[in-house]
Image (cartoon, rainbow over all chains, first blue to last red; front, side, top):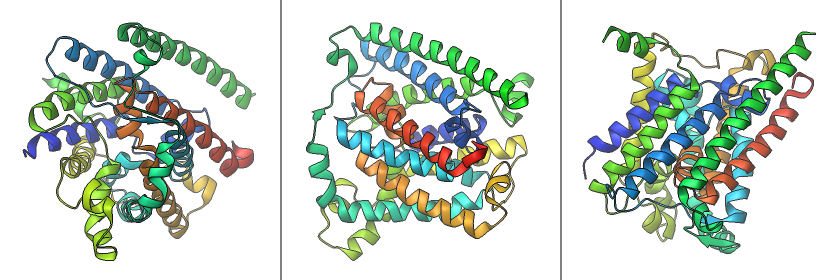
Length: 184
Length: 180
């Protein structure tokens, strides 16, 4: 296995996390306070560009298949709910802990990495008791939205892009009104 | 060329631009992993911590099926990617001159939670335990599930993102109180 490829992908990923401001506590927390939407802008832009690129390469036959994350509604949702708590408390998540460590952040490098390893250990040791039962509930397997709503994938990508643009417009407006109120 | 160097030295880019760049990275990951791995992989971080802790997991519980078969020890693709993320953050910080050893966040934290390093480090530790456990349950983290699942249009990603924002907003509201 080549180590250059994953190192390169990770390198670009970490570089962009830092340039996007995702290694900073206040940037992550403030998306939950609606005072700085950088996280949402970063994620939505990545999703729109990634969707177009990945479906295009698959349609053109450049790649044979894409990896589909399995959907098991209760586990995905419960995991997301617990994840959001951790993200709002620490102002960081899994990949920015590594990128921020590279920036010299000792709170990420020491308690952050130790915490991730401890969480990984606890998950592995309790896996048999927790995961199989949880992932069996409402498990739809590796499905994608175009199959769910029975529509062409380009229609879904187009809709997602429009929704993302409308969301930004509405949120930017809401933030302006909110900051005007704080100033007044 | 000078323009490129100026951009690389900037401490911060527009999040739209950096995010679009990350979208291209998922496409690059698909192309490279399709050629080099038995099954393609996009981006992720939470899995690497599991590979890294697996030797300890197996020492504590030699018959553990998770660390034996699902996330075995070893320098996997994910581990090299996580090392790359660290190096990418380092390179960007060095180029922009923002690298600095620091124990606390530079902005906002101390105004709300004070200057205690112990308090910050304990909160980061327990939050990180929760983050990694939650990523295990959900099937990935912000990159491995929200981004990698979202770009292939898997419903799992959008369910995860909805849960993450719902509890994140409530948690920030509780922590910040009147400052929210």
